[in-house]
Image 1 (tube, rainbow, N blue to C red):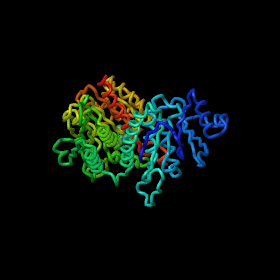
Image 2 (cartoon, protein in one colour):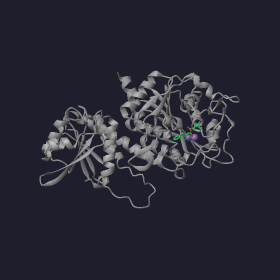
Image 3 (tube, helix red, strand yellow):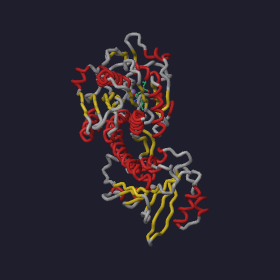
Image 4 (spheres, rainbow, N blue to C red):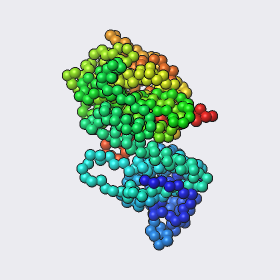
Amino acid sequence: MKIIIQNKIEISPEVLLVPVANRENLEKVLSLLAKKTKISTSLLQADFKAGLKDVHLLYFTENHENKRIFLLGLGEKTSSMDVLNAFRSFIFKRKSNLPATIGISFLHENAPADPSLWVEAAVNGSLLGFYEIGLYKTEEKKATTLNVAGARIEIFVNKKYKQAASAAAAKGKAIAQTQLELFDLVNAPANKKTPQTLADWATRSGKKYGYSVKIFNKKEIESLGLHALLAVNRGSENPPTFIVMEYKPKNGKAVKKVGLVGKGVTFDTGGLSIKPSSNMHLMKSDMGGAAAVMGTMEMAAKLQLPVHLTGIVPSTDNSVDALSVKPGDVIGSYLGKTIEVIDTDAEGRLVLADGLAYAVRQFKPDVLIDLATLTGSCIRTFGTYAGGLFSNNDELTSQLLSAGQATGERLWPLPLWDDYKKEVKSDVADVKNFSGLPAAGAISAAKFLEEFIESHPAWAHLDIAGMAMCDSEFASQKSATAFGVRLLIAYLEGLAKNAQS
Ligand code: BES
Ligand code: MN
Ligand code: ZN
């Protein structure tokens, strides 16, 4: 798919998409479009109010050719996520009935003066709209005109912003390519996805985009002493992997050393503390944190961000077997702390404990961030509207909150007060992995993780349990979102900007 930036519409393309927000100049914009298509201004204004998700179709003829303009409503307080979603769902629904070239116009002066962020979102959303979830369907895929060779999107912007829009479009496309791969990875079921699959993905990506990837196999994991990861893996027929990725910019200095850790549980049955069967199939997405970390590594390399990044993914499934770790077992960890396993379904915090401790000891990052589909408690708190944010650092908190706001991949803070610390104190070991209480589950999980960061002064834990799989136009069931990649990239870009000023 080629993307071309233009500053004038000489002849209208067969299909032109015009995103329209409900702003003060709405009437003017609609009257211009009414004139162009030779219809009544008042009728158009009555029929189209630019509400979020409204789509309105205008037919007209130009040079004896039949053409279409689609108005995409963006509502009143338009965020870049609204723009992204409007294009994504439009393309998803209409892709079988679009010509090989479509235009998107930002010339109607209804977008922000510099439309770059909207251009990025429109391109990102349009390309995501091509996603087909039916990876294992035997029926041949229908070709859509827009993904044939030679297909292109022409984007029309004011001359002044041509260059900015061009960079924004390239970025939107680059992000979409990574997100589409993550969709397949997260949506893949457990019989098609093992810890080795994640390792292979990382290795391939590292080779392609020029960052280093080291995979530790089970033997090496044993000699490193990642005992908590090994404990979760005991009941599995698939050996664990421990994925260590490192990216440094090719030219210029890195402004900060950032460590990322992602929960890579390829399937979570709960172990012997087994989960009820009703929604267990969704636990194929329990590596959503890992996907966010791997996607961010890839994007940072693609964009050559001026940061030194380490990405760590401890990966295993959590299965039921005679060898499985049992409730009450006391296990070791990379840090040396002993852990009483009260509930084998609280496995994410065990693998993260080793990932976090390894990141701190081996890489000494300035900032440490982990992402995990960690608790049902976090879903009960925020639903699918925000990830939980836990941090011991106010600056990091506010940076992550603004990145979330800007990208629409929202976070909201929850406390790390020491009142909750007693909930992870064990009678027999240093810590226990579950309080046993039906309360404050997301917070006590975060307090458990805090035990393994060796008092790192700038740590954030993102509980993305509700965000990795969501309802969307792609499927009748929940499906992958690639949540976290746009968020972390925005955060890292912010660090780079801060260092400049
Ligand atoms: N992977 C789950 C959390 C989860 C639940 C993610 C639903 C996405 C959707 C995690 O490993 C888990 O099982 N957490 C338990 C912890 C409890 C046993 C202390 C939970 O939240 O119920
Ligand atoms: Mn679990
Ligand atoms: Zn889990």
